[in-house]
Length: 239
Image 1 (tube, rainbow, N blue to C red):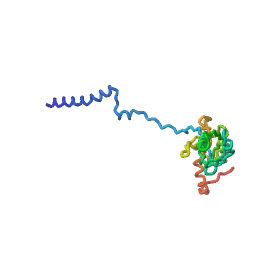
Image 2 (cartoon, helix red, strand yellow):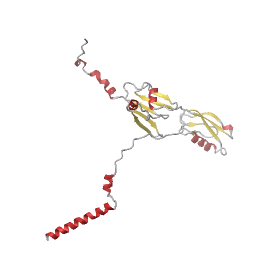
Image 3 (tube, rainbow, N blue to C red):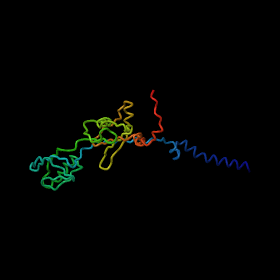
Image 4 (cartoon, one colour):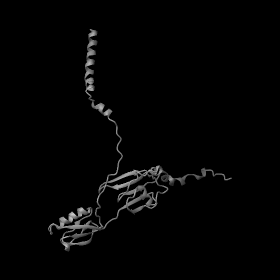
């Protein structure tokens, strides 16, 4: 009787192993095995989004409006009011702030299409905000600077007077506006770039960018140094 029970237990054990063996032979893996076998991939480093946006009109800008077939509606140097509207001949005021030139041209065509048949309109910007960047924090001369040609982050720091003695140039922040609601930010280690002499990762600034150089740790505790008991120090003996 005992021998029969042992034989039955062995048979049950073999039956329980067979499905697993057949699954392995068929190349199937259980979900738990799939999870453990999946390689862990590090999170990608955040990068700035590519932005080649057209210039958008702002209050204080001005532009010329030319009608090819109806010159009586031509208007030079139309100013954009502080509220973003413009006043034009023959049509109600139009809000143009936030539009680029193609969008502005289309808006004018729709407005004048109510009094003219398929008007041909040309728009040329006359006065507008020039490309710029802002430097703030621990630089020699914080402020707003004109952006001419391709200017890298390290060049922008140099234009702003370079780093101060309190700067932490291993963590220079660069802020870049993506749209009306979002601004991207990234940290650059200019100290490491300059140390290695490899400026291939030195980013090129876009119009409207802002760089910020924070204080280093030592500058943050500098104000506490005078509170130490200087009498505890023994002056050096000068021979």
